[in-house]
Length: 114
Length: 116
Image (tube, rainbow over the protein chains, first blue to last red):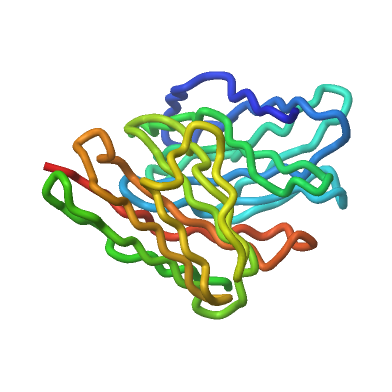
């Protein structure tokens, strides 16, 4: 069974600092991986996804993530945090098998301090 | 890009009544739709998966008679919370996919249900 672990339920950074949100997955074969952002009382917006092409994936709003098979990780980064980045971030995994359901991590709340 | 419209965005209902939530894919055919429930400060919990024209597949522990899901067309799925009780109060989110071969899941904006 696939699973996702997000290390750190809350990450706080200063405006302009590096953002690093961690995600590790458990899957028998390399899965599809996603990062979503959720603002209060809203749905989820896709930041980026890994589908077996380039291991370094660039997304919207300056975010990127690197798929590392040896570490079973898919950490999300952004070089310089902006106040508008404050939100909840979810890592999700989808099996490459017939089961195409998404499994979400527990989420990481990012706060950005001025 | 793909857009999923979810309505209403919030609803307050009396205990014992039923509430219907709609999820529409506006510019693509959603062969599969997913319904999630999210408790405050928690992750999304998948409730059920529905394919157009078929009965929904419910996750373990989800009462199918309480949470009725209909996916009658390729652009519309509905979730009806029947005989709602305060413990059903939550944030409900739908998601639509064009099919198994795609990697895109488009989410609705969510519905805040409060049962009083």
